[in-house]
Image 1: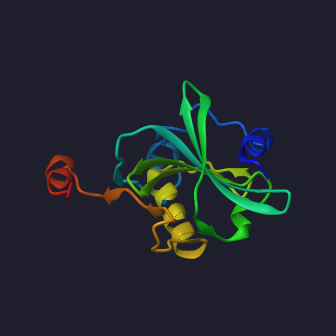
Image 2: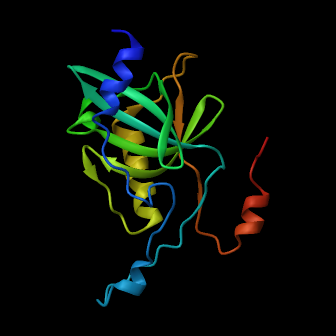
Image 3: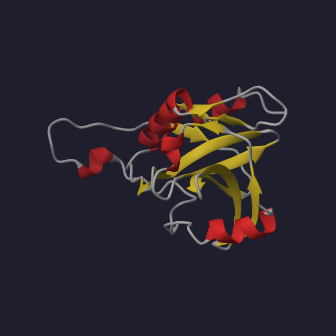
Length: 172
């Protein structure tokens, strides 16, 4: 099928993105939880800056796709097919959508928006990172080949000294 015809058909099935899809508007569970078992999420994610992109795993007409969507002002401005090996379950219902940042041939997975067609509503950054790590370990296969893009997690730390930690990162 011609990609110029396929993209408009695929985009008709895109789920609505909540207004906080491209940020961490997460609450600290310790402030909300009145139970004795309190949990504090001290995770800090060092997310690279870049364009607003969403990686979407979906099924259309018995074919499975991974598409990179570029957003500006809440509107899709570009779509690209990306070669990524993944299990078909990620394309269930309306698929899986992840906020990502592209750096060369790598996509940094920043936040899970939809998982297998359901809105993912973790209250903590750590919850998102744990689920993204699980997806990378069990459902997404990073294949080392020039045709395939690599998926990575951002740098994560629980240190109280973010500046000293960030100063030791290997930036190019």
